[in-house]
Image (cartoon, rainbow, N blue to C red; front, side, top):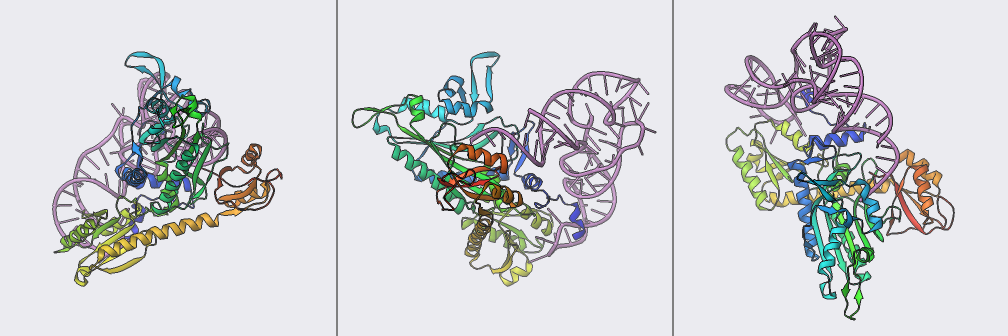
Length: 479
RNA sequence: CCGGGUAUAGCGGAGUUGGUACCGCGCCACAUUUGGGAUGUGGAGAUCGUGCGUUCGAGUCGCACUACUCGGACCA
């Protein structure tokens, strides 16, 4: 049987070519397919199911914090987009435009939304009149379009799926609290659902969202030690409210501008899952978003009673609330083992005649390959316990990668040298000057990832210019 | 957007000095199998990425375009 190994579609080793490994996993785990337009990807059922699980869990969290879902138009008139100067400068270069309606050229062209701040503002201006109308806590699940020059599955699409929360508040303090609250929901989601450790921090002015006063970010480290921005939460102050003339009458009977936030995560999260947890056998999915948590594989399924026994176990696990697939197709067991490993199913349950005799089954963990014989009595609890253990194991492994590849540097020279050797995150002191940030990019090839909330005192002077330091900053090469 | 590479059946490849295409896997049928990608026999599947051009004749030569891919620049 081993001789047939070469007949199987292989995944490039990540050590040999990480980018190629990533592309192979996306295609071979059947997450994605290409369409005929560059950067426009097809989310296949297995890939989309991951997104559905992410959506469901996040949406529950949003609802618990009293957010409401809405749906706004996909087209934005050019004049509306241009109302906030920084915002339009940030997004106009990558907009796609609709210029014809039917056979007629339009009087004004419409941008296909790259993000919906302007639409939300236009709407909020109509519906917010009194302090009693606040806060407004809206969220939208939709796709957005940005005409990217280069594209890669999940990492950079021209059209991608996301959620964008847009909220309005009576005071700056309330808006700031909302920015932090959603930021924390993202960080918790990464840890508790995706098993991905994050660095929580604030973006520098250079890196923050076009039009925002402050941008908070969760930064993740991939297996190749490059950074991926996992989600952002923005505080807008009242800048947009002023630009869009949104006002409300306060309890003091005076007219005020409300304060605003926006926050979002996208299908890019899936890229993070792949590159944090995956290995040379393919995808490794964290159990809480895995479309299939347990795959049940009958062994010697032609034999009397085997299928029925497998069906019974699968039914019991489903009844216990688990996502289960039983594969009774006529492929050989070995083929199925390899197939579901490539697809990253966290746990495999094998059940054959010998097991049935002993009232047991075989459980095999995807993350470690560890195999154990487990009694069928109480199998539901055993499986749940093991899925939790897998989650913890994945998190611990990713946390180790993050920790081992984050290091302090005292000078630009040191950042340059260490970054070339090992990548990862370099942490240094920084004066707060954009010029130093630009030099860091030009000479060491890294951008500032964030100013971590948890600051460390590494010294008194900026690693670039030697002037008095204001913050400790993380630097890295980002996707 | 800049630079390198690639495009032949679902996938991976071969295709000579230009003559309408071959192999392995996969797919379909049947039989034997079934605890790590099973075996045999038979069968189906391609206007060679798209468009122009050269030629009696183009998978093969030329030009353009598109897409993929790697690197860089740009960008949330």
